[in-house]
Length: 307
Image 1: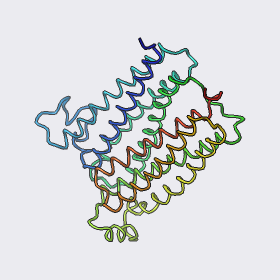
Image 2: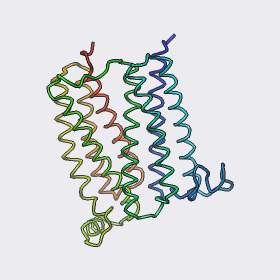
Image 3: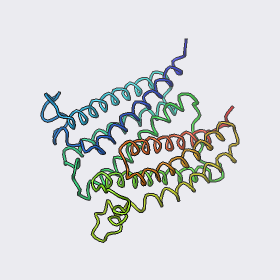
Image 4: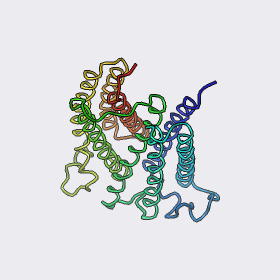
């Protein structure tokens, strides 16, 4: 029979997987233009607990709200389970507590987007700031969930000093990934609000002096992705050299491979004018890169070498 810590670890990875599914569903809500499916009502949907005779957009938005509520309940279970499975100062227990805080903030940001009507075809610049904040909080939530699962399995807290600049390199790589994520979220919003029929039309619109700021930002996302990708690869190489365990080396290699795959997928996404399916795959790969980097940092900065 599995120990309580092992059962909790499996549960934590399951919560992370469910949360990723909710994130992808939220991206589908935005990409399909269904963000106003429940009107400007929250937490009700068009003034009702369960909408009667809903249209397709209402079903899509209501499904996302229902799945988000389920994710919140799962995270509550994670917080309570961590308190039972681990002592007060255990890193998994702390990460679980942060997961609880961040999913609450996630719900509040989602409510703000709906109540302020930053959904569907709204093109106000302020929507970009809300989308950026939403992305940042989502990535922090994913990091907290991943660390909860990892530390439940590993249990070694990070050591921030005396690692020859490795912590600084990994933190810089993390900041870069967040920056690319924000630019990608705003770029995806621009693709949804200002679709084009051909690459030539997209290029002309991007460089037009009268183009919306969401469109003009398109050019920066691939440039940032390439530049940050180089920094992430260097940080992964440094981690593999400073902590040359098989685990750290495998994580570093996986991180570089994922980033190269993301660059390739991004190029295909641009060439095919950002179809919804590729947008979701691009987002999922971004989450995978972020999780790989977070777990790599936790393994490489652990206060003792891996067995």
